[in-house]
Length: 304
Ligand code: G1P
Image 1 (tube, helix red, strand yellow):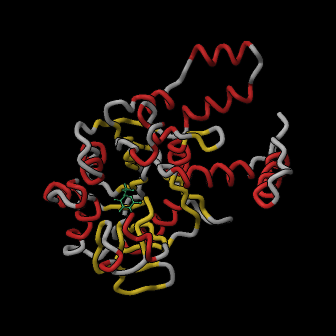
Image 2 (cartoon, helix red, strand yellow):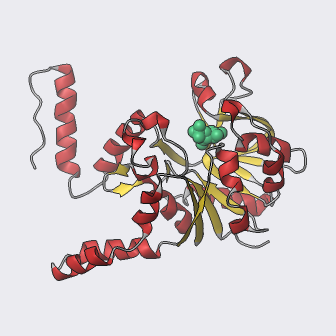
Image 3 (cartoon, helix red, strand yellow):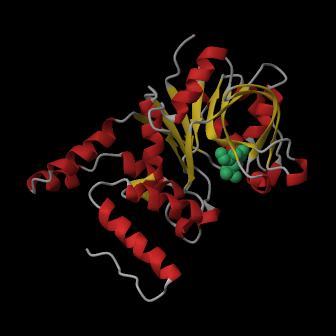
């Protein structure tokens, strides 16, 4: 079995959950401290040994491409001003992976977006990482897409990332019906996209990362429009299940959905607190904000 070297990052959607910001700026460029979310996603893939990436974009999303393109004039300026650390940081972005782009002409759903990458992927197995979601591996564990790749290598079958959510939230996600379980690995019996709570087969939801064998494309070609009148990746997976076993892996790590406003706010606080250069000040500020919530008169804005 050949190691997986290619990943598809769908990043074509409108980002309606983050309007009005996403009217002009792609949700994949929402910053988490100082890095756009899609760069975290590309870095996750690269850390798992994936070095060829195709980002699926659509009209109005060229800024994503610009983020990964070199900016020689800016680099010259940084060099002239001796800002070598920043310069190294920018150079690093140029070398994370080989990034290609493919266009989704009509926003016909996640399934259609993945199908646009067929020519790039060819006949190989590949990974899919949604471009608006950061998955932060548990300490000492491999990147989440690497956890899925390990399960794929063991079972030679497609694997999706799973997470348990409270039952009342399942309708936001693709939900699996587990057939059996071995530790964190579930064999799939069925999948359903955004079911009503009463119809959900479990509280195990698809968490933005996938590993596919190339036969998913044959199913995607045949998949009719489903939920939201869109071609759903989940529907194609359900069909593929009739042909081969498939698995879900309950991830070791946390998911931050940057396409949602609350997801963005919580991720900003958590990632901000990890930065040694302002951790102490930011923590002190947050404590004062919390105190203010409890006793409104004693909040202090952070010093610059
Ligand atoms: C998509 C998928 C869904 C999955 C979710 C989070 O939904 O269709 O199955 O659970 O991503 O990974 P979206 O958030 O694009 O509506």
